Image (cartoon, rainbow, N blue to C red; front, side, top):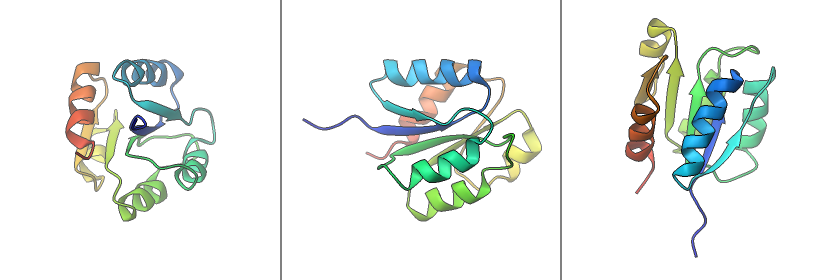
Length: 118
């Protein structure tokens, strides 16, 4: 039996994080969410603990941008979906998958399906 794919979710807005988590859970994915004020810092620590198959990163976090985390994930070959309400920041962020807030959960799940390694 294979274990479910693991998604690291870095989103400080609890309502958005819960919506995403619910959709990922319904798709049979294991989710580690890093909520709260120290979001990027917590996620950096989490990235070193568990095998992660995909990360969903909000680009505007209370403790600063997740750029170091994104670099670490990229170096490890882990795909990243960047989400943001700032279209300029989103366009400039160096990842293959981007989604502007507000978004439809179906659009996010389509990106998750595309981004998860085969």
